[in-house]
Image (tube, rainbow, N blue to C red):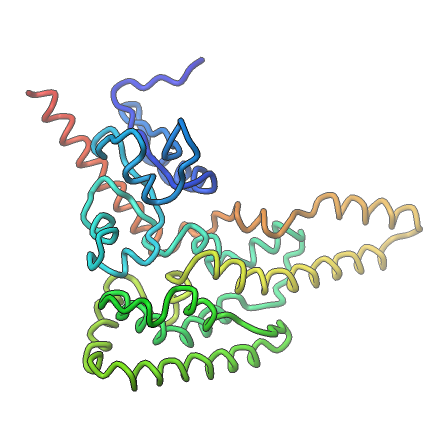
Amino acid sequence: MRPKWKKHKVIAFVESYDDIYFWRDVLTEFETDDLGFEIVLPSRTNLNRGKKSAITNNLGSRLGTSMIACVDADLDYMLQGTTQSSRQIVENPYIVHTYVYAIENYQCYAPSLHQVCVMSTLNDRRIFDFEAFLKVYSEIIYDLFVWAIWLYRNELAHEMPLTTFCNLTALHKLNIHNPEEALENLRRTVNRKVAYLQHNFQKAKGKIQPLKQELEGLGLKPDNTYLYIQGHHLMDNIVMELLNPVCTLLRRAREKEIKQNAVHAQQQDNELASYKHSCADIDQMLRRNTGYKSAEQYQQIRQAVTNLIELINKSTATEADS
């Protein structure tokens, strides 16, 4: 009853427990009778975690046809080789990355968020336009994000560290009945910071627009910037701030419907208990969300795995011939 690998098994190192299911889902599509993957943490002998551990692992093994790394891109993909870690990400064919900042960004993929609400509340009413909101949010923070990339590429990250960027792009006093107010406050904050950067970094003049064009070639556009910012910030401070009140309203609506339609008190209590038992935690449903597979960036992962398998097959065939 044990799984049998007829020819070749590839060990795929990932960063943490949360990454195992995501990369298993990605790689399963590419398994055949001749090729299989085993997803493992960076170390089986200690608790080291993270991208660096996944890439180097404590065994000192070199990545290759039998060992690969599957990691979050973080900002490294956008930096395109201007740092050591970025060079590893963009140049090593045995490293597969997310292309967006992290797995959490996929889980927060805007077109899939209504489905997350349905999974959590079992109520299919659409009472909030997640796609429109995250589009506007992205457009507001786009210029500031491009500036962040320029600063990082020019060894000026200390002028606006990632924590500062996250603080500047957080939403305050978000009301889903009037989200425009929070967005306008955000716009003012971001515009002030962009104006400050334009004034204080004159050497960037004439370089921001070409950078925008380059980043667009990597996938970044004004309306999808949310996919490239820090994943935990997006999930915890933006998306969950939307999902919690939306799901609360959907649950209340369903409970009100049950109370109105119940014939007697016993039926009402039974139906309410059954409904509450069937509902699920929002955070858990968000982390189990797989509605991102239509995203262009996910297709980039699939293409990268396809290229990797071609390389593995070519290398193993050469070894067999020799």
